[in-house]
Image (cartoon, rainbow over all chains, first blue to last red; front, side):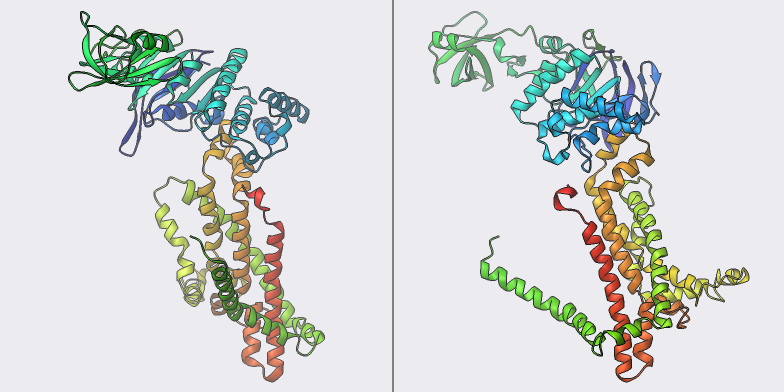
Length: 338
Length: 273
């Protein structure tokens, strides 16, 4: 199902959660709404679901205006941040809920629920109550419950936020595989840029109630439209007024044309990579990311004076670019945003 | 905070002694006095026509007041916790009115409104309906004084359970009505149950407001508490003691039955989660 969100505004009291936001999501895509907390990403998702009503603007699903439609009439599946399990029902009944509401025949319900429980690996747990499950299992139950009604649009609010790192990575890959197999248009909200990069086709980066940029993971990383996007999508250092990614900083032992003298404060071994913390003449601090081999070759240690250069080709040219480059293959902003 | 074992024990002892002096000893005395002259005598006093009539009137009043207040209470709690209408603060305050107004004042105000010379009373009398000094007024008085219990038990449970499960049900296609029956009601059921117990206990035990609007005629407008009161004040000697204590015991047993019934239906801890 395709989504078109047009000029959505939403206030909570004095707080402006969404400020004239427009977004198009193509059918079959997996889009991430990425931003810090308070950026309006969850509100946008809830407005698409019909759980919140926008102050102004329209929501079109498959070209049909659903702005005033109730959530139950939108053909969506929604996975809540804390899963919202039905506490008084078994895992089986949780997953069966949507089918029972639709008054499907008993046998059909049983077959479909068993199929879904197998898909999410919860067959053994079918008779348990949600509070007996681990976080990851509860999350998969919530997914199965949302998928049971064959939604044409799957909306996930911080689906992996409450899980520990290992489970999170595993579920992320699992969700991506599920999306590839079932092809349901999916929108997920996350504040984790790595998660957005790994799982989605398209990322909409949000900040303070506006969409900063829409593009493929590579586009938003390599060609960030605004300093905010650059800073949010990966680590950055500010060097003489430029925003630079640490891996775009090169380090040498002798002076070179265009290089700046810097004091090496710390050398941090991160496994294959080594992070250097540098102090620049103006008092700015910067980071450089080298491989272990490079660091050993240069025989670097804290207290050394080194010369650094940077490649700022990936940085947005200040002041911020207001019209993002033409969006990714699945989504594009409908108006200029900043 | 760590409390030593002896401190814990002495605190418990103090609580037990306190409760015993205030509750258990007086209740025990009632039971003892009731059966002083044997079970047969006590049984005789609770099966007189007046006592049987009082028993049924009490049960009838509770059977009407409790469902009314349960439906109203759950509805009002939903409005208070889930609603977005502006009048909520006012409703919130009004619901506590029966707790803060003396039951006697409640009874008197009902007389003023529904009595022979009252605002609506004359109209009702014209239609041939008697409210004050009749069971109808006693029911209204009982509904009034036992109104807040269900609301006050259900509202905090509702807000603790939160709205997410209901929203999840909506995204899965459930209508509001389906969501209420399948999601909301099961999640607040213990709050409702406890509210019902308290409402029932109050409906059975209420005397102040009911006394004002009752004509106090044995066999027609005496509830069990009113019967106890009448026997205490109008009969003499050991008869007064046994007869009123017997009715009192009957009342206590009815309340205990309600309490035990609810405890049996009550949640096993793990279930409540």
